[in-house]
Length: 423
Ligand SMILES: [Zn+2]
Image (cartoon, rainbow, N blue to C red):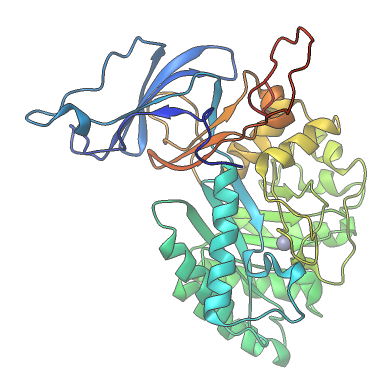
């Protein structure tokens, strides 16, 4: 795709000093909202300051004593749908793009940091301004992979928010001593959450207990992998999580047995599913895919459900794309969710799984936004390729797609040429 193509949003000068002294001012004009309204949106600093009818917010405020070009940026979003930005709640960036690499892939600090950064930028280009990646620690990995993620997180500051979940393999008994020490070290180093797969430890309940103790000590959330194929085992897990449950995420739960959704109902635990293929590299050797009917059971039991990408061209899914709109498309195309609920699963539900506040295109909300070519949410999910991404009040990514045909077709088509995007 050509990032300089002509159908992209038209912008004025880049973000400049905010006259109020709180950061840049950005005016998004003629944007369509999912409810059909066409509005202008004024952003100040990292917040939406005002939303009004198109043309109704007036010009950008003048900065006293400054030339007009430094008062802020104006971006024409005519033909675009403006949405709360998606988030990626379950990624494995330390393994991203490794499907095409030799086994084992190169693991120098430079290799790892480059792959993690490239993966995060790929996801950001699709619109995910907040992302959570699970990272193996201990065994042969030590803290090397986590350190690469933390280096990438620092480099990406201002472009996207990257969270890291530390995943020790073993936590119990003598064999788990190293994992216990590495987990505490990882949380001190800056890992956002404690995680891993209890089912890979000989004592799953013991694993959860050690993890919870470390999470309480570090005052951090918990994000666990589970296949949860046994409802009794899941019930024990949910019980063991105790009062921490509102800060607990379980994923990808692809093999959750019938009855599992009932166990989780009302527990406060959030579930992240991976519609692309239902599995990820965090469950090596475990069952793959997603049990048919699972998502409907979770929805009917009112378990908070978010959706993510999971694998980005790694062995668990060599064609993984990390596009939140694709995850939403799959949820909607399968008939499990209406397009609006499907998009909510990859945006505000995903943000909630990351412990982040909700976003609405309304005054006072965080300026985390995705503009996507199209005039309706179904149209955007069907094929919104051209996108503009706003993080923390700043345009951080822009993608424009153009399709051309060699010859004119003699048919009266409503839209004969232009973008490849849906609408
Ligand atoms: Zn995973």
